[in-house]
Length: 223
Length: 264
Image (cartoon, rainbow over all chains, first blue to last red):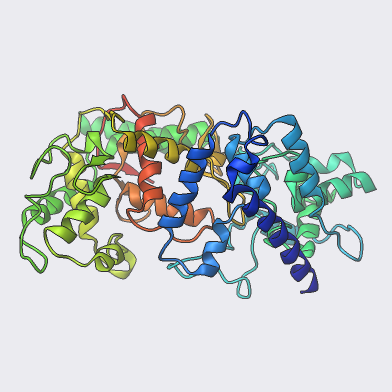
């Protein structure tokens, strides 16, 4: 609970900084130099967003607010300049929070369920997802191949079959945790959601997904 | 002969139980070819009746509706939409324009049109909009999309649409481009349309969706994608949806319209 509040504050602060930066794109014109979209087009997109979600609640509309990373990625069609990419990675690294008990592997079976599940975070007129009834999933299979026995895997992300062969040393544990928590700390404008930053997955759920990836007994690591 | 072809195709599907994505694709394509006619044709027929039927508080039909080629012209209008309409000084897609006509000509209530824009067969909820859209769109079958973007507002809609296409937001950090800007990408086994290299997908909408047992329109697609991206419900016929549709339709220029198609 406490963690989520801290997270919320951190993220909100970043969002606010981002809003400030883009409500006046011109003030940062230098920063967005060479972007794919000119400031006029970006402003017109923001205006369109303002006009086009009038039937949602203010709480729901918070999801439309972009943080700094999102704004840069939009302006540069996900290929920011080297300097901006560096800044995005730094900003996102600062958002990563670690479990008090240290980074550990959880239960790979539960991790497998989370990797399969696309439940969670949907809102609107259709009955919104309720995390109290069913936990949010990680939906890993939507984009990644994992267990060799599950052929219905997407290919937007790299194949992760046999991920655990790299072992479970501290560096691999830290890398994997951080990557799931905030992929944008490694690769600016990555297509992977920032599961920890947005509180889609808890640190326990991340530990379970890590076990699914890294536990030698997990189907991901079977031939 | 037709029966034989069907049997052969069924054989192909039956034996082709390979799980590779390629095999999956081939079988779905064969299945579609086998169906030949889309159940969506029923929506076209119903839509025609609804278009010419007197309705709304003013008890008039949509015959006086100018969809871009003058009052009552339905043939070929879809191939040029979205476009700029001087009477309202904005760019509209087919659905936004039909809603405009329903309000101004027929005196229908905007909230009620929006509330009933999408059918829900599971709940027995019907949509006149889906039927009328299917009818009007089908009157451009065999034609190619041709958006001039000659009016500054049309160009603005296209450019804004592309920026919205890349606009990242929400708890998943997604934009449309996250999934729809490269070739050969899939979510699970579902192949994904690439807005930068696809002349077939957009001209196949509206489509009969087997999984939904109804015809779905581009406005529904815009709502559905945003919902799946974990964003709030985007307004029916809103500027963001029209701009996105302008962008994607222009990208599809050259593709032949054949609707309602049939999809998963």
